[in-house]
Length: 140
Image (cartoon, rainbow, N blue to C red):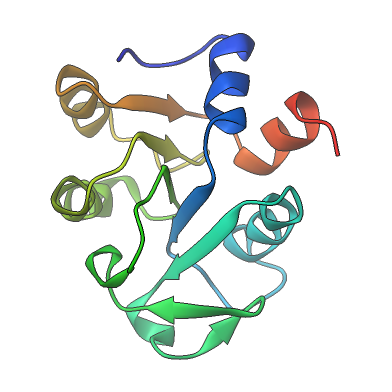
């Protein structure tokens, strides 16, 4: 699949996805990974949180995993809150786990990783906030 930029494409991904792995979750309500996840969860997505710092704890009522590889279910969307340089490792783990869409939150975009994933047939979304797109494109 290509890099998705059109509203219709992004809406289709959101409508056809049920599980989201948030990479880089924080327990701080003022951090984007927290408040974005809170809103996305309110749209009915099953959320899985990944951050070794909080492994075993609960954030927003969900268990936090050390690695995406520890998540017991299939993942539709990998939602990334990490520095662009760190996304290489995240993508490697995601490829081992399996997923459908790799979502770079604003400020996390790594063009080399995006191109590689797109060339391998994965959906890629970047420079769009998943919270904003849910609010804009999905009805509650």
